[in-house]
Length: 68
Image (tube, rainbow, N blue to C red; front, top):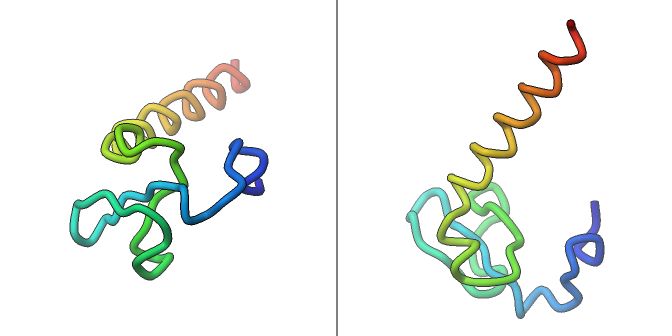
């Protein structure tokens, strides 16, 4: 999935959550292995772990429904 698919054109105008520091970063400041994102807003990036957990839960639920 590309940045354009996420509605993001300029990587300097994106927000990332740094899993190593627990901080939100504007633009690509740290190594990619330490970042989650991109997110459109600082608020979304601050909720990165929550958002990813919810997406993983939905994927597991879909997988479970396919087995039935």
